[in-house]
Image 1: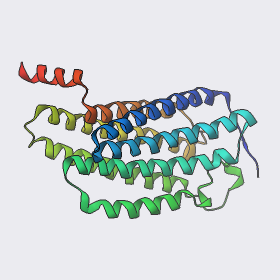
Image 2 (image 1 turned 180 degrees about the horizontal axis):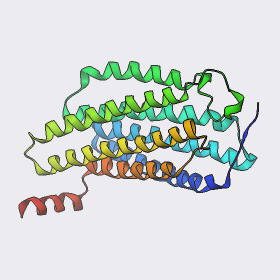
Image 3 (image 1 turned 90 degrees about the horizontal axis):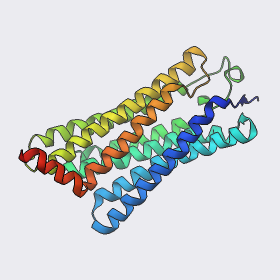
Image 4 (image 1 turned 135 degrees about the horizontal axis):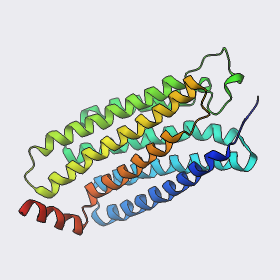
Length: 253
């Protein structure tokens, strides 16, 4: 079995991922202390959602570090990809729990979310995804990477779309302006996640149909939306004093 050489053009993405890992971990810690302070479920769900997302970024960074050190995308890198996607799936579960709790909707669909998550995680680790393996090594053999990636995207879009839909529905009945604005932030956070996955789809399509080595410009744009998501979802729950004052000022004028 051969290995794909590491390209120096990927180094900025590794640095980018390390920054995102640190940022996500910091937010996870802040959310944990917020949960310790309030002792209510929403901060705990967000803490877990951020934590799994941060673990995904950390593991991806470790895989790329191995490639940087050895000069090739090897076993750690190949494991890091399905593992990171699995962490994203777990993050989605707790994001769904967070939204269902604050909107008091969607509890009946939670069992279905769990079943879909288990199936997707199993699919991610099937050998026919050929994660990080050069195309010439599996030429003529079954190749399901595109389908598992699309499955992850569809699964995530269903969750994010549902959260946005329910938040918008609840928002129309809320009179408290602070809560109203928090739901608006939640809706935009879900849109940011949808755009993140859309960019990752474009990168996967380049790899699948145009023999692109991956980590295109779409990857950078994807995680810009990831940063926007983290900021918006954090603000939607924490509602710092400066934001509350701004909301009150805006709606009182």
